[in-house]
Amino acid sequence: MGAALTGAGRLRLLETAWDAGIRHFDTAPLYGQGEAETVLGRFLRNRRETLSLTSKFGLLPASHPWAMRPLIPLARLANRRLLPPLRSGLIRVVPRPARPAAPQGSGGSAQRNDAVQPGAGAEAMASAEPGAPAMAMAMEMAIRRQPAIPYTPAMLRQQLETSLRKLQTDHLDTYLLHEGHADYLHSDFLETLDRLVQEGKILGYGIGAERWQSRCLLEAFPHQPWILQIPDTVVDDDTGWFAARSAGPLFTHSALRLDRPGARERIERLLPTWAELCGRDPADPTLPGELLMALALSRNPHGCVIFSSANRARIAAHAALPMAMETLEEQARAWLRQHASPPILPPG
Image 1 (cartoon, rainbow, N blue to C red):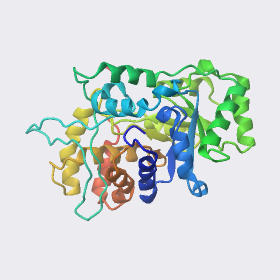
Image 2 (cartoon, helix red, strand yellow; image 1 turned 135 degrees about the horizontal axis):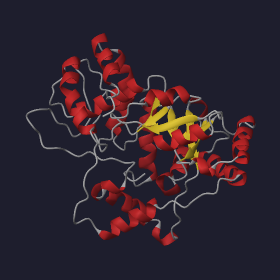
Image 3 (tube, rainbow, N blue to C red; image 1 turned 90 degrees about the vertical axis):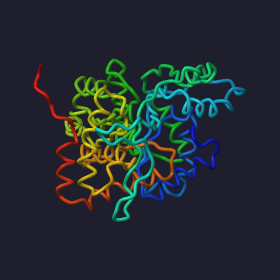
Image 4 (spheres, helix red, strand yellow; image 1 turned 90 degrees about the horizontal axis):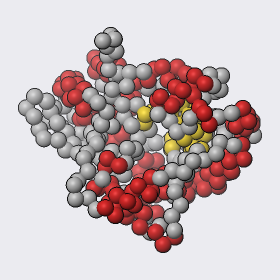
């Protein structure tokens, strides 16, 4: 929503994803300062029965005076350029200085020797520029403010109906509790979720939260048919644990994040072997992003890896990656499976 400042530009990004074969779309009332569901709803016309759709309950965007709303996309764009650390969910490409010991990369689209294009740029957290405008920072903090939402049956139905109206559909495939906590839940709320499934308003429900929050909810309510959506990076080693406990396909995201401790170092260690297995130039700047996505797909082979991009070439490249992985030699596929998660070190 921040990179494409016009409705037509946003629809073109969605068209690019559709043309590349993507058939699952994830959104929420919070996204795009409340506009994302409406934009996606326009795109879904005459397509709804051929895709799966997720939205969420629990977080809403802060309200702004009408006079300020035209400034929100501009503030978001300024933030994308100047203040990446404030946006933990949107990581921008940051070049790193080259070192002789390991190939480095910053971004772009990939091209394989066999004409398949499966790669994408590596994305990493950057530092705020010291001279970043204070106004952009203030606007960004206002945009990110998230008021608490009461977890009541009435609020659940109200927010779901609002999402269905904006998305121009009569049902959601998956409805997730957006960063929900176990303390928010109670029997009346959970029974309403089950009734919404019976009514056909949602086909399933689950948890869209950090890993520790998801674990807490699973432990507190182990008998609920939770579908799980979690962040999953190259340094996470328990993705299989979540996959085994999800009532439907496990949804993962944040595969391209390198701001976690040890993430950048690990991908740099793996890059030379990946380049050799693929017969690629180790200095190819698209290799880091391609490897991060390939490892994410290998960690979650029976689920869905979600990504976000405003780069049309990168969208197409990510979408092509699963098919390109099937053309790899068995040695390369076995290597991906072996290195999909970091080794579990003994205590101490």
